[in-house]
Amino acid sequence: MTDDRIEQRAADLLPEERAAGGSADPHAQAEAILAESDQREDDPGAAPDSFLERRTSDQTVTPGETTR
Image (cartoon, rainbow, N blue to C red; front, top):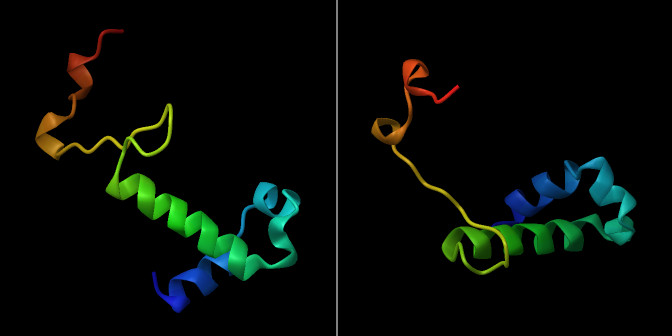
């Protein structure tokens, strides 16, 4: 994780992240958010009830193949 990435994320905290109370130190809050995000990306099973789905374009559905 780079300082530039952390600084950019700290500058772009979402309103609900700012309201969470951890924004007294936006740099530390951004660092924690990015660390958790990186962990979830590296290990999709790291967080309960969450997963990272990876597909290639040939695994997607064309508009005519939907079930609706």
